[in-house]
Length: 206
Image 1 (cartoon, rainbow, N blue to C red):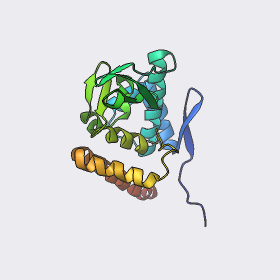
Image 2 (cartoon, helix red, strand yellow; image 1 turned 180 degrees about the vertical axis):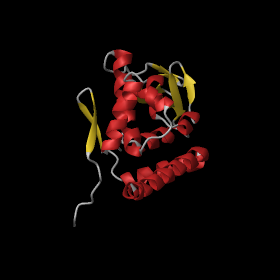
Image 3 (tube, rainbow, N blue to C red; image 1 turned 90 degrees about the vertical axis):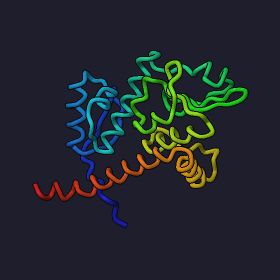
Image 4 (cartoon, rainbow, N blue to C red; image 1 turned 60 degrees about the vertical axis):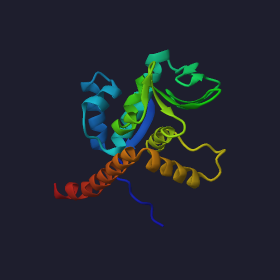
């Protein structure tokens, strides 16, 4: 079977690390926007409205790396306390995002410095507490996991054998407890797909 052409002819890097493959136009935009915002990827995400899905994912990875470095010199420290009590166990999903458990409850805590990687709709599902956006494990935690999966910042652990069922259960939980977020996510995905499908036609018309 012939390999499908992606159309990617460039790549973006930060601090010598590959962030992702993209088009030459996206690579040029990455350089231009980062220079305009003093190299602050989180600021680029806040101040500019539209990016291709590839460029947005690249900027989000750069923002995570920068926040990680700025906060603790290269590594976020796991939280010792949470809105639900003293933390007994903590799993790092990606830099600055922690899955915590306490004696009675738990949830996911996202450091404010990396909040730029979350969509506005996802932020609305959590609540702020002492430098974090927090998500209850019973109802809102699935929103964070969905965001990280979509952005390829986290993958389902190997200990979970039926990954398709896990993902469907995640989606079902979101549809039940966070329908506004689900609608916003689906709308965004449809808009991105429409932009992707019209890009070749616009390129051919030039």
